[in-house]
Length: 151
Image 1 (cartoon, rainbow, N blue to C red):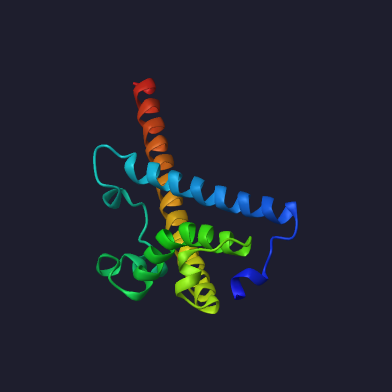
Image 2 (cartoon, rainbow, N blue to C red; image 1 turned 45 degrees about the vertical axis):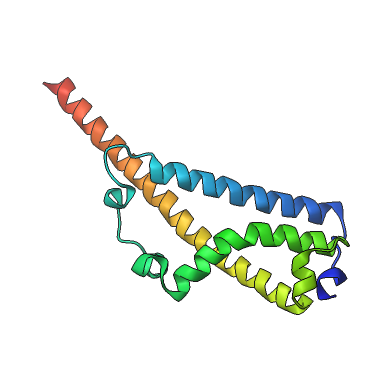
């Protein structure tokens, strides 16, 4: 019942949600490209700086820790969970809402949003780090070209 109380009230609110979901998809693809773009070595070897504590905590022990679990949970559950939750908010019935109390579904969804936010922080760091590697390589290439010209 708690899921059905909230209705999307305006087209502006719906457009905001579309923009947020689109930004998340774009971030995921840019992160994918950033982590796969180096053909000569693994992306972890190309890191320009030591990861911040939050990133290290997510990666620690191969994601087998509370922060890693939360990030992976958010990464996988937030998109599908949002679809199921919004479907229920629009008056549809889903098997999740029939199996679980509405308040529990809301808690699980909000928890997935926290996890998705955490994974977005990691993705943003990875993209910024990759950009730093690209800029450093470009600067090194320019230095080499200037040395060749002066000889």
